[in-house]
Length: 439
Image 1 (cartoon, rainbow, N blue to C red):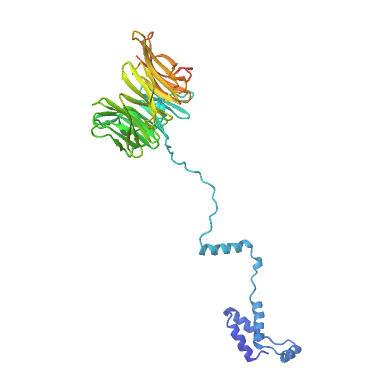
Image 2: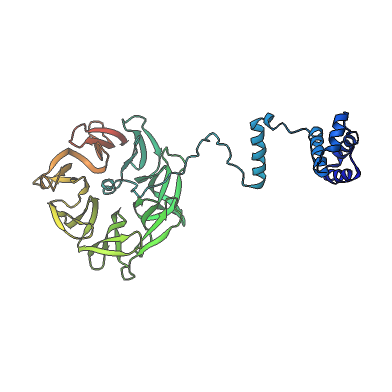
């Protein structure tokens, strides 16, 4: 039997147990007697520590009363879930599962630092411009477009517009009476989508129907006589601001109708009505400073080709020069002298293209012709591309074609027409692509 001291030791240990188990354990201890006489004799004669004995008995009874958790039977996934949940409540959430990629939203069209038309087209007034799929051209003031194979021809702008340039998804042009101010119409820069929709007046009134797009900006000369200045605005017409103001003593100065933008500079010619002099200048589009490249009489910018800046010089009604210099004003040289004043020039890949009117010995007009020559390869020996055409002027150039406009009069029917034509660079396949008839 268990004596009083053993009972106290047991009770001290049992108090450490939960209330729920205490009743069952005490009941079992009360019935714990030796089952046989041999056991009773052994218990009486054995030398044991009563406290250790009581602890051992209690341990056995506790193990019998409290089932051991079946840890080995818990699925591994359940164990992992419990651990994950604990971490989620004490630490940063675990990485979310990878989702299926959503359809990307197209980024806005970025306009690179490039021109709205090619240099050689800027030289002849941008009568045409092209994209990979379409050719846009002006005819009798309206704007048309057609596929590169001359199919799907249609008019997309139906009023007096010219000087075509493209930036991103927009076609830019000058409408001759496009902006009404104080009851009068003024030439202004407009734009529309490439299919002719969403026409917009940018309210940029120009002094000449000339402007240049370069990157994210439009550069133009405003109609602000007697002032002489250069301005720039964003492609949507916003942020219109002064780029350069010529000195106040240049009230009788005018910027030439032809200018070009290249490699961070605007190249232009100026004319002073007071002293009858002109200058070739360049204005930095970064800081708005102006530098004089050359001072000569009656000169006008033609175009830029490679490292060369080409310009013309009017001498008199029977003489004019085509010259060139480096873009920094160095290496100035005369290329060719012409016996005609009004000549339309352009230069592409080292080849000079020009249109002029020729006369016979009696001074009678022989018509207009298109010639070409290569000053660095063949000298100034000219090659005829297009023979006699009335009222001819160059419209523009593409990869495979030269575009020009002319006037044709049929004496048999007494009907005249304006025509837009194209011809290969070797003079072949001279053909009409558009015609506007007049009476």
